[in-house]
Image (cartoon, rainbow, N blue to C red):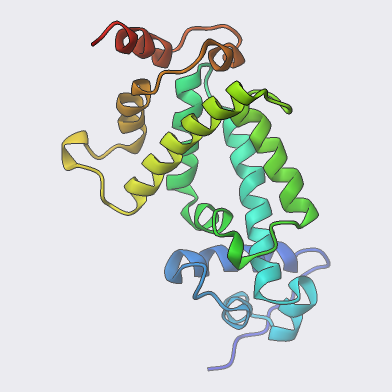
Length: 207
């Protein structure tokens, strides 16, 4: 059946297409998504979708930029403490899987797009605790990011050991403290000692 053409007010079509794209990605994955299917789902013509995004890569670029902005908001809203920053990252990945899967597939979109670069840079400041981290802070930030990103990916793929439980946020609180977080990164949380800091102290006192 042909799509039912919907009437959108000026400025409403672009966000409607983004929502349709996220819904499609959630069902088929980003690689299988097509601009034509997104247009059909939104009830508009393929030409209307192409007018706003050009092609599939353009649409996925917009999804990636939106995802980085949403991740930045989630990290800014996280409870104080280094550990809770990681929990917020995992929470975002689990609750916004479609965005998460696009953001880290740069071969599918245009990673040098200005909106993507700006949103990604703002998120990096939150992850590293600085816009210009020194080599030590950068390495520590990447280590922490790798842990929570890998944890989120393993959860989404259903490959974590069942003994850890079924709550990704609680799993993060159990696993993340095993990363030894430098004082420079812990200070990012305003000097407040988090559960992660306590875990680091316990870990450091072990064998």
